[in-house]
Length: 212
Image 1 (cartoon, one colour):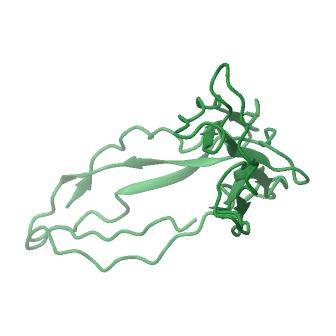
Image 2: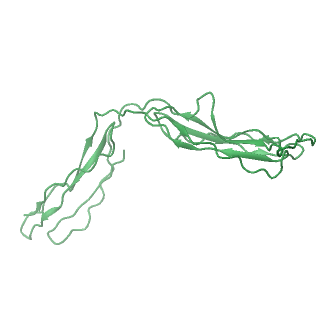
Image 3: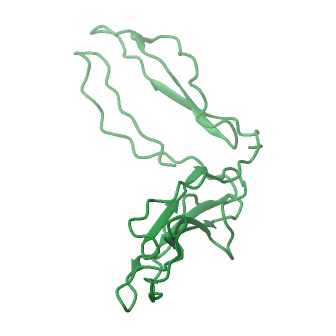
């Protein structure tokens, strides 16, 4: 008769807290001959792990430093801008960047200052105008706090000027700040079709995936 080998060691847990899963595998150590009975059973087993460990040490959102202002090609009548990004995304209920009432700017624009020792004595232009804000992007998390962003374009003013131009062109706000709810039970997909037999009187295998 066919016989399975010993189970291998468990793999690392897929999560360090709030429950994950781990796998163990085994192989057929002895194939059945023509008169024997093939080994029956599963080649991979799965179990939950770290269910009772609560995630701790929440991580707050952290932004990078502002970049240097871009160069000005036209002092007094030109426009310069600077930007920053997300250095660390919030995790496990950490404080997001910005608030529901006031979004955080990731990109800023302003008119160019005069060159050192000079003043801007040309007639003040009407300056730029901003387009409408885009729709908010999808949230980066479904619960425990994520981030979303939106942007808008800079358009020439009525006189065709782009300066002065001060305001935000990209901003960030928190989303889905509710705490993640109860655990979702593991759900398997359907079994695949049986594979080809390893030999006459040998073994054949099938598999299925974890859907959630």
